[in-house]
Image (cartoon, rainbow, N blue to C red; front, side):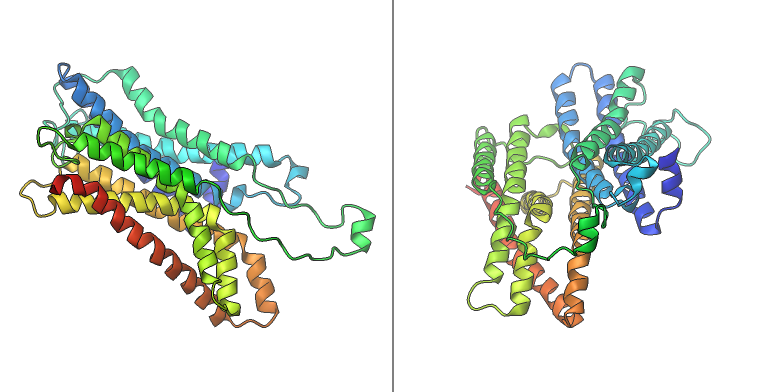
Length: 395
């Protein structure tokens, strides 16, 4: 009940992010139900049904990542001084964030079920009743247990991931808790530079392994690397595994690459703006590097798919297009939400710099420098990964 009351009183932008999570959950739920309908209507094609279900876990993972990012930026669940006195300590706030995430995802799953049943023709009296009965295998009955399990995947996974991500969030302490601290103001000490992330070598290794698996699975009998158009079950499971390894590797390497982008900004006699931009980027590397690496993996896959099928006669199927839109949209929204969280966390630093007399234009130029440095490193990396993924098909 408290989660619903906080949702009603939230800022419109917060409500919009929650609605986006619900929409993404609805899309994933619809894809899962389509996979279940295919399995019920084609019992002899068990391999194709399993591959369709496996492909659904890619947008599911992107949706869970987006839901966690939205939960982290929710102002109603951020630890603040004095909330423990009213029974809202860190544990309660974590549970509240998990419940809010589960409510949003459950709403999306319910919408997906209603839309799926309506397009199959099971719900009559509405426009477009049974418009996709053939594609959704309306003649085959749906097992109730399977429907409930699949629709519960996104809410359970998103709520669990949100709770795990928020359980170690620090809580600000109140000033003046003891007499000594109240009489003697704390002396501000310069913060040490952030330690470099340690996942860069492992990320590079996993990315190389994923590309190797994709190249190996693309050979033999002239089969293509990413035969996605038209059917979700046309891609071998090994190719999906290779792309998953590549995405995980880029997500692990992203923080390290972002950290070195910050060091690059501070190289060769930097000025005050470059020092500020580089230091902020080094501090935020762990927060934005992972989502940026995932976006790099998704864009490289999209570029490779377009290079293979963009000019071909076979269009992408509707389910493949829905999955692609979900993955692209959720990963991009996760990156933007992580950037918003980083901006919220450095509010005090920004205010301190402004009090020292720094112009607002300098802060804006520092933001542009950070974005340009990330683009300078990640854009060629995305193109390189896409070329390496599509290379086995052109030889």
